[in-house]
Length: 342
Image (tube, rainbow, N blue to C red; front, side):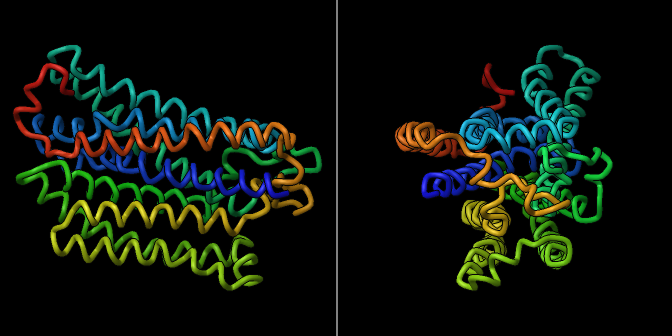
């Protein structure tokens, strides 16, 4: 079980890293109608995400790939049972990616409005869908003994699932507003800081409500009650949010964004820790759940993959750190005039 446990931890960490990185891109797009008042400000927001969004999205592919390779049983149950929701997520992400490139292909305000709409929808919908999906996973999917989901798309839109969707939208919106404060300057940066302060308060309220609903709708707290030391995991989102607010008050936007990333990672790890050893709990009968024991690949496969991961994951992390440092400067009008700017 050691290899399976290691891969379960890696699986959770990969999702946490994806949410912390692509989350600010999705948040930026979601906030565009509220923060950008003219074409220049919209371009500032596009270019604040421009050098990073495609690299950040690689972590989604990595998390999905690890699910397929390390836990194929879970992958099969997840992607067949949530097929419609995952297709909506895929199409929304495609729209967002295309919008970066297509909006500048024609010098027309109407053309740009179309792709700006696609960009907003392609940012808001993934945030909402990911929150709904993960909340339902925490709650449990109606898997039967054959690992077939007996539910429908509408069953995902239960109170707890919708609460998860709202939580993710607020969490990513705050993350995006803080990133815009890091990358922008002038009035739009001040607007982003004011928005971040309001979103912080809304997120604290929503996170408190979500924890209460989690205790009512799920069994996530069972692991924590069995081993109280695990409650340390909850310190990550709490400390992250408190530090984000403190740094925001001090106008240290970079520190605030980093603290927000810690909070997002903490929220993800809280859910993953509560599910262990299940990856896809069954709401029909816990015995029908997809776990690290009944859905993992062979020990040889897990061993080979672990060697590959130990080599290449640090390389990817180092590359993305280099990209974020290299493009850490603020977006200026000179940058917008650059031929390759969005």
